[in-house]
Amino acid sequence: MSAGTDRRVSGSPLLDVRGLRVAFGAKEVVHAIDFRIGQGEKLALVGESGSGKTVTALSLLKLVLNAEVSGQANFAAEAPAGGAPRNLLALPERELRGIRGKEIAMIFQEPMTALNALYTVGDQVAEVLELHEGLSANQARAAAVQLLADTGIPEPARRAGAFPHQLSGGQRQRAMIAMALACRPRLLLADEPTTALDVTVRAQILDLLGDLQRRYGMAVLLITHDLNLVRRFAERVAVMEDGRIVEQGEVGQVFDSPSHPYTRKLIDSRPSRDVSAVPPAGDRPPVLEASGLRVAYPVAKAGVAGWFKKGEFVAVQDAAFSLRPGETLGVVGESGSGKSTLALAALGLLRHGGMLRVSGQQWAAGGASDKALRRRMQVVFQDPFSSLSPRMTVEQIVGEGLTVHAPELDTAARRLRALSALADVGLTEAQFPSLLDRYPHEFSGGQRQRLAIARALIVDPELLVLDEPTSALDVTVQKQVLRLLQRLQRERGLSYLLITHDVEVIRAMAHQVIVMKDGTIVETGPVDEILERPSHPYTRRLVEAALLE
Image (tube, rainbow, N blue to C red; front, side):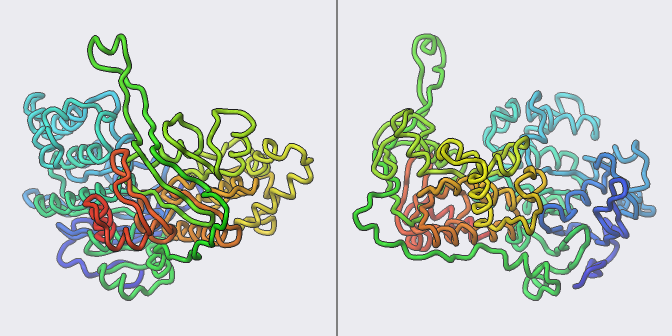
């Protein structure tokens, strides 16, 4: 089905959006789009960051600050009331407040920021029931506990008294779902509801949404950039690019026979494997090796015992691994598995027990020897926007390592080295005039990650620690960055310690893989063997969850 209104919705639609435009001042970001959602239907609105999909959903309920919204969003009246559909965009604020949360509810992307940190999750769910259903405080509290139970939260009565920070990511998202479903809405707007979650929790939340959607008979508008999520969950899909719906239709039809180039680009964005065989090490020692590695954090003991002695939380226990020159060692596991702690220990940033060597040398807790090791070992973080200082220019960011590790270079030499490193990652003065004088906010997410990689490469390291280097990026940009990393490894003989929860990234990049759970390595070996024939139940669960998406 081409762009424009998809006429496959049979009967009167629950929501009929026509000519929706959203502008901020003179800049229009959503351009006269049309789509429809039937009663009890699941429609996915898919596109990359900046495509306009979240602004579209928020604009339906006038939740975008300082936006000029026009067009029609006709929402069908409830059956007992009858009457003509109401144009949500023309309703006064007072009437919209009666619709928000009651007839149309929303699940936001990051529950930690969407939930109020000062109130328990039970109180926040109960508040919706008191406001829209007129329940007493005791009735609302009991109903909130039941809703938490319906979403699969263990010990719902106890968890109702917990604050958001006391719940796991999956539990917080379940609490958000309970709040959204409190009044049995007819339409649920789900904005990237699983993006911040681990792969296994993601599958659980998706199953939960599907089950509740069927049980309550509600329609769902799923906003996402994840095509695997769309394939598994939705019945129809609308693809957005630059504020326009370029294609829409049934999921099977659009995915099997995409008619628009942008849709084809999204479908072809799955990470692909293009890595060389690991060269013989000869007499060279492993770039990184560990045995009996242990990392523990002090924690307060409960009761009187805590006055006299601290307890400890063991984040990594008895880890052993070896990373050869030119090889990628993937570390995969869910949040809290210990993989990022292992990376920080490898970087010499955490005190640790056991043996840990970088190119045959151990960290010495400071001094000249550690400085030499830091030149050999650099890091690329998950979110380039937060890891790059907004107050520093590109020249200062990329060249910073040279001021520490090559102080003999003058300003002109540092500039030449910075331009060379930037060219290696695909950023040139021809593309970006005055490149060195620009600031991070002037670049896209993928370009900022290239800046972060250039900053790491400028000191000619042997090993890069890649901590979720693509998880904050759109799927097409993710593929570009992975291709860049693969090329740099072939050209420079780099070794990578790759930290990720994404099994597909591991499959595309790694030679060897270790699987972590609760601070322990449960399985290790060649990537093909571990992903194709996993022996540990936890590994099988990770792989199966990735295949289901």
